[in-house]
Length: 211
Image (cartoon, rainbow, N blue to C red; front, side, top):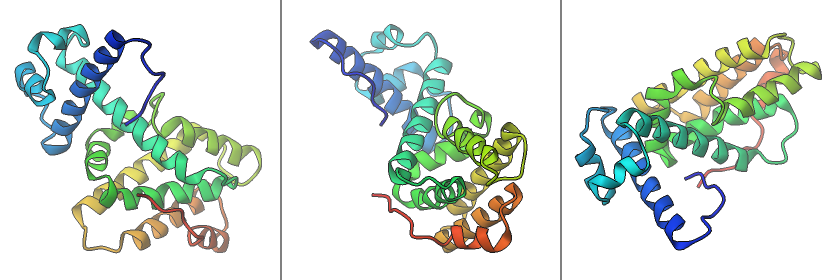
């Protein structure tokens, strides 16, 4: 899961561990059922923390589940970042994001279920993959790699397309995920203005794996 600066003392470490246990429990609930009506008592029991500890970290269940989604999206963004480090071509970065996401349906199913169910409301969030994708789109537009002119609108289109890929992978595990992701990434690049032959070549380049 995403990490921040390490706590400075034992109290802060325990406090951070308790908060993360609650977030982890909320993530599990979102991935398993998507039902946010679970009681605070049930969440605390799943997290293996005391009931009273909940209010030391969150004012409400809504705040906790929002934190759980944010945590999941940031983990998603970091996972993609780690695999695409060193890639400079904005088109290849977009394609790799699609193709790696498809593979994560197998390697990170909990994360992908949360993304499928909660991602639409976070396409323009301040964390997760969104700011990274927006950065790459701006570079692609500035360098002429992409012919679209509005990176925010392009992000909406790409985000919706990516979420549909996640839904497809989870609903149809029998499909060839790599092929589906490459085909969809090719369509996305053409939508951004990349020539057809170039888009096809980019989406078939060697891809770093996920573990």
